[in-house]
Length: 240
Image 1 (tube, helix red, strand yellow):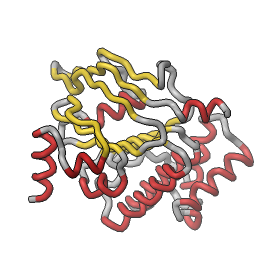
Image 2 (cartoon, one colour; image 1 turned 180 degrees about the vertical axis):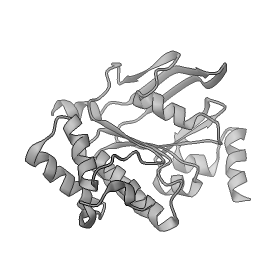
Image 3 (tube, helix red, strand yellow; image 1 turned 90 degrees about the vertical axis):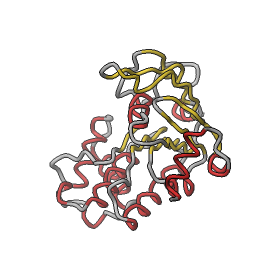
Image 4 (cartoon, helix red, strand yellow; image 1 turned 30 degrees about the horizontal axis):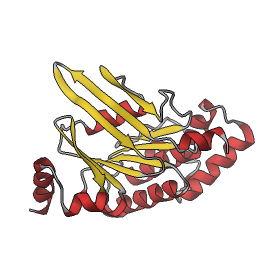
């Protein structure tokens, strides 16, 4: 078993993670374990701390207290990626965006071209490989962002509401790509406002309220019988 395979089998463990912004505890003593190769969805109302938690888990933000570890070690796997609600794309072609990310990861030449071509084909964008990325539609840009992330073969993929600004057909296309990436063995950690989306895709639901984890449980159990009043109110609000 290779090193990457070993790392991919480790849980992500947040212990006492606290983040303060402008005197407010955005995250308040978060204890959380994300199982390897799972699809963990982070739910909660606006301002609950979902995006901040995702960034802390990914390593973009260092918490004011607590820590995030991979298994028993604080070392992070070398291959992780994050896709945002609004894709951050360079002034390059679609293929050029992917090759640039691969180059940063040390992958160049024929191997980079092959990976870029394969990644674009997986998201049905091969025909527009040479088109400037920033003139693509919103759905195409998000699929390109996912192609770029998948080309890195991440052990963990973090997704921050990747379908929030997309129409239903584009959202379903993105969901299919996420499912394909997960099927390859990648752990998925994703925030969403859509209960229907979480019902379709999640193995585990983490529910945040005012920066605290009120539930971390099997998705089916969460939707059938949420334990916290905050989660029950959130679910009932979407049904109205």
